Length: 251
Image 1 (cartoon, rainbow, N blue to C red):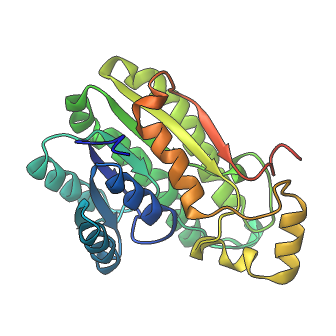
Image 2 (image 1 turned 90 degrees about the horizontal axis):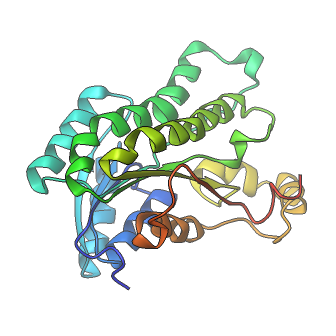
């Protein structure tokens, strides 16, 4: 307990799913968490739940597709805390489409959310992270960065870029005392994956490829994020942790 005592954390897309689980666990471990989401009401609900459980949290609205929204959010963190110890780039979405039929609008929506938002945050938050001297950026990628699945081409492309970004920033940010690592979840039962995991035929096909025989939970991913955020991973940077029940190993 209290592995993150006194630390300041920001988790994007933390109004639900994996982001909510990460924000809640970080607060339980002693961090003051900035709960951020494009849905301000969802962010406020999560922050209120954290406070009700004796944790520390502040809700902030942020659309990671909008540079001005990111700047306003980071300005609020600077004014409220003066530094940032942990940044979790979790916000993401997918628009299912056969690639040959995908329009530019859908491609831009996916890229701007999954990749551009993480790029801007990792860049624009650096001054706050440097103040920490012992900071951790955790980028949420996916096993889809390393495998193909129909109607997920654009999603896979952006997640592959997130993994590459992690490796590059790990080298560039090390002199500033900022570690950068990636989590690569497999299929986790959230709203983002509901069409897959709740369709009986697709569910069976995916579970047949998963040696542990179940889908992940948001808590599974939050537990791994806690490790990367804490001093227990102090000698790790540029690494990718795969949390997929063995799916990638069995390919």
